[in-house]
Figure 1 (tube, rainbow, N blue to C red):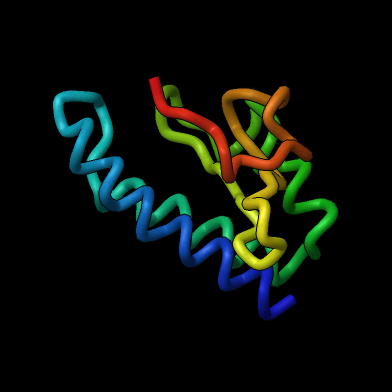
Figure 2: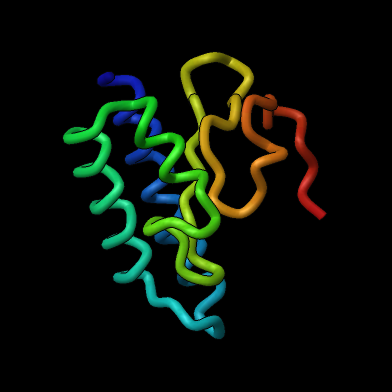
Length: 101
């Protein structure tokens, strides 16, 4: 559980940077931070399996337009995607060699 929380909070930093990078969009860094904090509370109360499913639901409470969660296992050496609110096709796939467009 500790490793999983570490992965979520690592992603929190990424979302903060992402929110600033897309400042022209409709969300603020504070909104991104609030979403990650909400996700951490949900994980604690509902458990890993239910949380990952909720984080990956494109119509769920953890997706707000272009603001969504992506959870990566940073401890497996492959950076495997555990949840993604916009692209379920990435779930379960290693991201270590993924090239950004």
